[in-house]
Image (cartoon, rainbow, N blue to C red; front, top):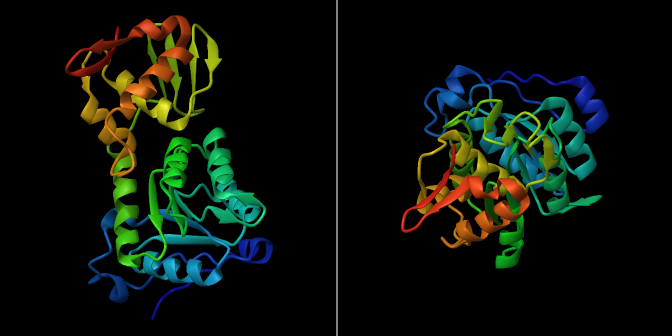
Length: 262
């Protein structure tokens, strides 16, 4: 027997069902379930109800709380009101493209820290690269293994809590505000992509310490097969250009990597 709790406001206004818990008998012996998922909420956004139901079933079995939407507008409303830990979405959504959906989440302070996994039939390399540029954390193509998707969710969530950052970090003229997801140089706001912000954040966590290129690649891009090591250099060039007079704060240590000057 499982305990099902329905949020009537959500069910009436958004056409979703929120599943809160399962009985201990159903989940205690489940190898997919991990203790860290007890309070984790996943938002599924896909135009195909059968896909959200099937994925949702596997995620609930793994111990997650699941929210569902079948169009972009509803998905954004739920993201703002429920603040899920992670969203899984298709690139083709009614009312808005998946890429625009991701951009909207990443540009707003209330939703910029939601982790993102794309689940789509579009398998072209350019689609993957564009998604990663926007700030997607993982990319899974259809047809897919639900079991593997659950483990990818675990992996993304583990990375997101591996090194919690301070809310506001200042190094020289550079100030990073993680709560608002923006950067100031000498008090002036500059606009960075999610990847650029994440890279600068990693350098700012250990100012003065050399961060190897391979470490930055792993921390910023994770297991993304479409990304090459030289992408770090490309992003650093773009980041320096946006930092303007503070560009010299990022020092190149030839043969090793980069560090943020103190």
